[in-house]
Image 1 (cartoon, helix red, strand yellow):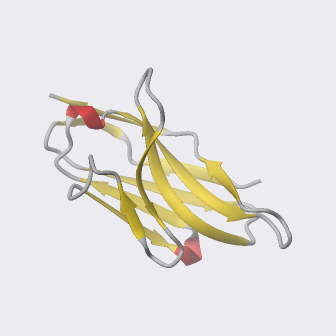
Image 2 (cartoon, one colour):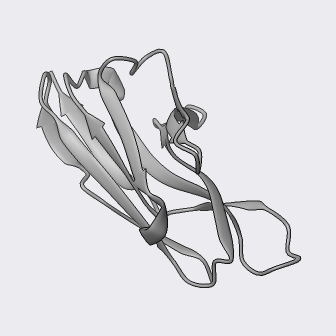
Amino acid sequence: QVQLVESGGGLVHAGGSLRLSCAASGSIFSGDTMGWYRQAPGKQRELVAEVTSTGITNYADSVEGRAIIDRENAKNTVNLQMNSLRPEDTGVYFCSFWAVRRVGDFLRQYWGQGTQVTVSS
């Protein structure tokens, strides 16, 4: 019943910026790390950035200095601001949320449907 809705993807010229947003809803007892992953055609999904419930962030080397991830715990939302975009940033971006649906349940990772980001040269 946990659902993640992503928004903000689109077509951007190299050097431009995008802000991706994700909101989690449904039966959520508690939440932990939220993050963003991306996947290019024919390639494995890779971590872009993540942030724990206490605010600790982790960025992929490829986006370090160009991306900022932030969250609002009370609303179970997470955002990713990406600047100085490059063609290699192109891919489908997925929102991720580690959460427990109810007390006594186990922690698992939930995924959004993904939003397309295309950076032209």
